[in-house]
Length: 126
Image (cartoon, rainbow, N blue to C red; front, side, top):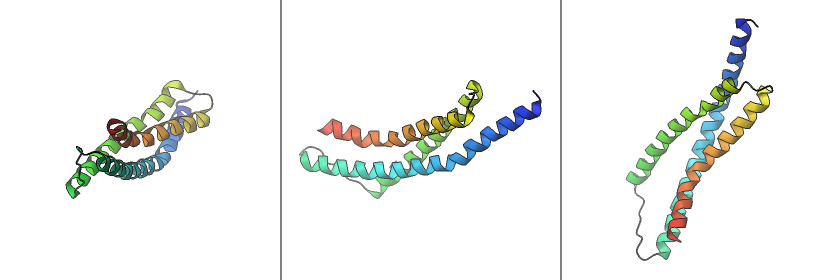
């Protein structure tokens, strides 16, 4: 096969993943906000039930956690490259099916990770 065919295939692969990146990032932002609201709710419930736990949220703690989450979004975007890299290595017969499946697994896994923090707090103090 000609080199032009392989270049076109790589271009199509990269374009597909590039188009999906914004959906991925929006999902990360929304899940992060929801997880943070859930974290505040869990901490409020737990601190009301516990006499020895006293936690407050200030502008500084919110800002600090937002910066930390932005860094984590950056790291998640590095892991996003595993999709096109794995497709290049595996070379699936049905590229579209592989892309959709790989994207969905990575998307839902990445969007579920922020919820581990409020879940961990809930488990620790119950």
